[in-house]
Every structure is written in C-alpha cells, then in structure tokens.
Image (cartoon, rainbow, N blue to C red; front, side, top):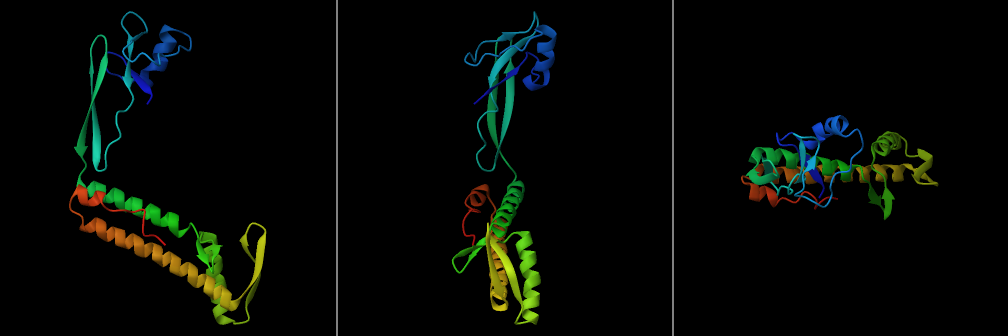
Length: 203
C-alpha cells in the first residue's frame, strides 16, 4: 500500500502539499518511501507526517471509519468497522445484480454450438427480420454477418430460430435477476445477504 501524508493540524496531504512545496521548496521534492516514522519538514512550523494509506478494505456489509491522532512527531490512524444498514446493502446488491444481468444479457449466447451476439444492434436487427420472416416464408437475408469476415444467407426458418434463441436468452437473464431479487428481499440480516451469490446461475 502507498502512503499519504498529514500536517499537525490534520489536513490531508493531497489538498495542501502542492502549496506547501511551492511555498517552501520551489522544487519537486521526493517524499520518503521507506521511513514511515520520519517526518518531512517544510519550514519551522510545518511538517509532513507519513501515514499508511486508507486502511484495510471493509468486509461485506461494513463501513470503515478512520480517526487520526496527530501529535508533534507522528500521525496515527485508527480504523473501526461499522455495520451498514441492511436496506443499504440490499440496494447495493440489487444494483450489482442488475449490472450482472446487463453484462450477461448483452454478452452473447450460442446457437447450434456457434456464438450468437446479443447486443442491442443484433437484437434490433433480428427483431425486424423476425417480423418479415413471419409474414413471408420465402424471406431471406443475403449477407448476415456472424463474425469478423464471416457472412451467411439466412432463410426465414433460421431467422425465426435465431430470434427465438435471443429472446429465450434475454428472458433467462431477467428470470435469474428476478430470483436474486427475491433472495435479497427475503433476507433480514447482513449474514443472509452475504450468502447470496449474484455471480452464478446465469444462462
């Protein structure tokens, strides 16, 4: 982890260091990298105090609170964990599930063992072609691009099958998101929320 620095009044390093350096040194001074107890002077009444950066990552459902005790020679950071409100964690998980659904929905599927794009453009193009194929059994697409430099002719039954495959994929994505949302709604504790796996079970 990197270091950040504080002066005796507790003002954070990133906010005041450029002004201190310009006022006191006029040069691009390097800060100490391997002496976490050594203060760096910037004049008779100003010192930079090395301090471990940011602290530990918060466990699931926790916030990290930091307090800093600064005296004439050192700055000490104290970190404590605080439970987040269950409602806040539920909202975060719902957002994460929606983001995962979006990723999977538009990330592609397979059709007869071959990759099938499911991005917005492909969905729109196949939806339009599906309507025409339903109305005209002889309708074809002469040059459907299925990959870099790969084109093929699609007849009406194939167009319909491709559109149906994408529709099934999209609905499966929303079905999985709905199932996760149900688990989140049913949970009443942080421990129950932590047990919900939003990464698995997708099509």
